[in-house]
Length: 504
Image 1 (cartoon, rainbow, N blue to C red):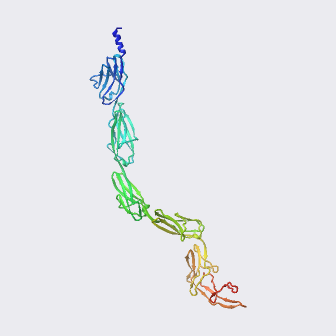
Image 2: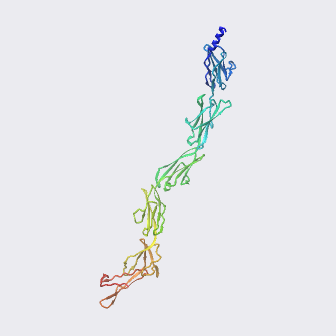
Image 3: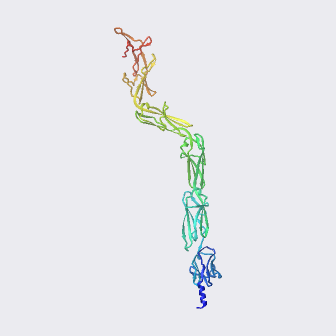
């Protein structure tokens, strides 16, 4: 082997890559340079793309090898990068049979301008769910889409991707579920599509026009009123599309003639329980809002107590209900007594007797407003109670009465005296009179009381003297006649031993 051959072999043995091409990314349309530096080599260097040799010249105007022979540099420059440049590249020193590592050139393609469905203005109905949709096509790698509402990030979106036929570019769709409310009308939703080719992203915006029924606020002035005072209702409303009209009602009954946003009237106690409502309507629908008035009024009887008749030893419940505002105080008492028996709507009496019969008072007091009361009768059926004054008087020559008091519920069918058989009857043209007095039945019989003022004198043997005095009452119901003996105008004590009185 000659010395020249040995020298060439030594040189080839020392050839090596001092810099090999590295993986790179380039944005579509931009310039990229792949590095290749061969140490101690002056032969032919070529580049391959996906294993095929690249020609340099007019047929490949965007490709150029940047040579610097003194340092062994053979860099590959690609201008105006295209998707077709997305490949594996290799630098080869052919005479030295030397190949570099394969370098991946990744051509980045920004997404097309995104489009939001419904742009520029999207008409929605409040309360109806809807998916905002943003589409961006042809990105490499796939675009990532984010949403904002009036500049503030919104979470909750999900997306899908579709690979295009070139198997490199991707179309991305993003869906943002929303349930619009009336306040969303006028809002702007923006989708931002980005990938490494456009880190700042591309934007598309849609303007929301949300149709909704009226949103209503009902207020009252003044908040509290006395019965008979004026009160003003104000119905404030917003709507999209615009408001078409107002309707007012009270207790569910339409108020004819009330068609404006303000309603003025005079409040009575019914406003406390029957709400005033304002209905506002537009082309989409209507909204009804109600309010009660804090009306101050005196007691009004809601449930009137009814008379009750029971038998002795029965349990009794008397009912009475009042309404008033502010809250009232209710008391039950028996007429003529100040003792409070109950503070509830019901008065419960257990095992009543005839003494419980009478009038009961249900009284309601509304502080600083007024007082109301009503009475109810409790009748207790039981055996008659008879009473009479033991001594009754009449003036000679004048009309007299003999009185007998009978407490009985129900009234007696007949009254019997020990000395008279049947006393409820008629005497001539004058019927027996029955009247009520202090819970007792007063029975009176019109009559003339006749008296013989001068007794007949009879002697009975010895020192005994017998005086006879007779009296008669023209009443079939009269009690026994009471006799009073007098001597020289002085009443005589008939209990003395020397005087004996016999009534026959």
